[in-house]
Image (cartoon, rainbow, N blue to C red; front, side, top):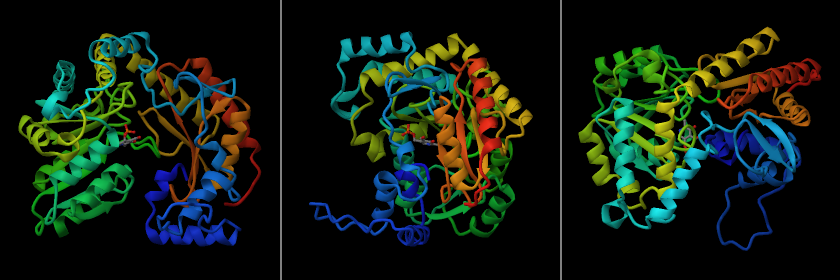
Length: 437
Ligand SMILES: Cc1ncc(COP(=O)(O)O)c(C=O)c1O
């Protein structure tokens, strides 16, 4: 279990099973200390168990920890500097003086908020400057930015599709896509992770009855650090007259020679993907999300997507930080090369030390699979003691017996930090007790 959001991704059946298990283990009943009139679902006991009481796996205190200073190769916790593998600050843009100064300058010029939807008085020249430059960099006709990455997916998928349409997504797709699909009212058909034969089967059976069909994949999957077979997805979507959306949250800035993501990695034509989506929170050192694609589709979103039209424009410092990061990645492509080299070094060393890193390749996400959940939690805890921060993911966020801790590498990690961390991990793993679960 990673976060409260992961809990919300469980089916109600899974929640009930987990709740029963926890109640058996002595978890608290729904709270009676509330002054709220809200009728809490029974699984709130479960959430509290993880978030506050934590009488089960000993995992809650690992989450919602408060850190000081920058979130990059290191993090400071209670005055202690840790080697940090949880930053998602893939290219070290957050905390870069050039990016920070751009945000400060934008505040000086525009203030901290544009206060209004861009449709009315919220539009500022840096919004279009960023969107135009982003589209040019990605090789698409246009792009549009929203105030949140999650909201981008939820709003765009929820808005563009509806009853009579079919949305097929990889079973490991992010919760924001699942929420959008639910919101849309379209028929939803997940396919097993990276199993494109299964996707074909679904299309053969269900394409005929559907109006518009959307296939959604991620550029890098954050549980396993693996990639989709994008060329085959493109071939499939063309053959079945479907649209293809790729969420590049963990691939933009990471894959491809110049960091232009999974499309550059495979050398595909940008126009073969209908909706390129990315967050601004990771590579772009900001907060927000984008959609890049054909001019007409971006224009339709600009004039009709409720989460864009009826929401405030991206804040000036966030827009300026994203623009500065975009300029910097083009000026300093060596950041991308360094990130790729560090991630490969981590993978090579981990394999040498016999660690199970699953299907991770090419990306900056590297899991170390422990099997049992308790082992993953113990590993994370013991690493913390050794000054390495990497958090566990346990069942049901991953299948039973596939618990893991995940390392998100940044270009700011030194070789020495990587070596020390892999050594520490291998040492701890070798000494883990042989516990079930
Ligand atoms: C694949 C994916 N899509 C979308 C999002 C949402 O982005 P944000 O956190 O910027 O809202 C995330 C967040 O981690 C993600 O991993």
